[in-house]
Image (cartoon, each protein chain N blue to C red):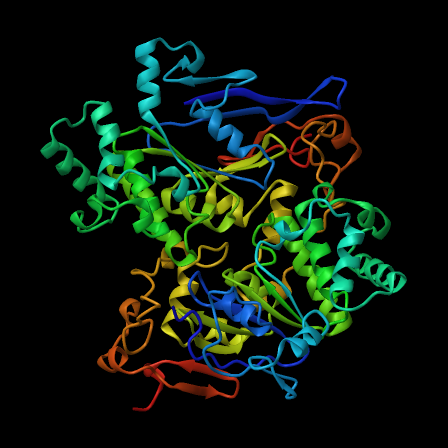
Length: 302
Length: 327
């Protein structure tokens, strides 16, 4: 199953890159692949993941990856709220995480954890002493963010960090992340199916579908002038508080077979503009204007 | 259906040595549902909306107040009336995976209520009726779906089967609790459109419960229905969809509307967020005295801490329970 199929993506230092897609788009697989945390059933078939121009994470041996995970790049996976060990106090989560990455200075860890928790508007003393079940969903999510930032990574990958949260808690966490970003300039890759959240927090965005990137650009451009039919259809299909209810509609059809995908563009069976070439050849990537890329025959010269 | 001053309290043991506290999940709710009405209930988790839904369909017993079906208290219906009530009030749950028996084909699942209520008997009749239902919910051609098992269908297809089952007995009211939350985003409107289409055809009433304000707005606006906002067991605002969304009256609704992210980067960054006095959500075991929202309300006054404001009609058909609007 080709979960991620020929993806080219840059993440600039200090930016918040939003990766938006539905189930089967490959966005979560992409996140796991970057840190080589894919399940045993998956493998990186080909390609490179260059980090700071120095190493290729796709080919690095385990000892090199160990230096990258948590120290350079951290991942907060989907449904991570359930990943907290119910038998461990929060302070021990921090200590164990540090130990697992070769940091044994307890005092340093507790100090750093306290600083991070404060930054995330939590009371360090109270939270460190608590067990996960004593904390609310929003508090747990903040603990996870603090855990991810413990060893001062350059980049955070967050996979659906606010999906399970209530509106007000989600707003709070999003604003906190923006604040954190402003204070530390940490690079973020924010993965979600919720385009409204991307509009809210991201600087640039990539739209994924069936393992491929359909469109990339800065958020203002992609939202104002979406060029890929999938981007346009996706935005129309999500009911929001703004916009005309009359113009909202679902995308007809379903995902293609990811094991043996048919030739051509992955989206053509559901595309209102599908042409003959779309069914035969995969579209090239076209740069419509600097920074705005789209993979679609409508915009390519044949 | 008429819900009068409904209270649903869940007893909770306090500590090991006994003593009982009550989680006041629903604490005094009134509403009326007529044939073909669309009533959307929104709120964050813990507001009582799911409990309210479950009580209306008879899954949970009221602690106080009453629920009337066609004028009669649902706890006092005779056998015949009760069967009518259970047939006419159907449920669509959130999870299409667990709502369908994995060991039964679509045909078996959909035949069951038809046989049970005597709508169809012979195999030929059943196949005909089930095929009709599958077409109605957009699963075409029906032959492709009749003998499939749930695991062979996608999430969206499974949910359509659940909808087919709910409408198979021609109910008057469908209570849908987060029916699209587990469906892929680009397919959600399809399910909502299906429900709205069925409303037009069969004049079915809907009680649509969700925490997704966008979906609530879409469903209520397209269906010409009302949106009610719940907080800590009470309805704090109710009115026509576009009024509640674009001209919220209750401070809680105002805060919610300003907090929901919108798919517009410019608007998102310009939006002024109404700040809450406190982030702490009061416990439903111990709601604050006076107006429940007073501990977090950016507009609270001394009166709000002492007396609970009644739900009053502030603008045409638009009600709010707030001292800002009642002297």
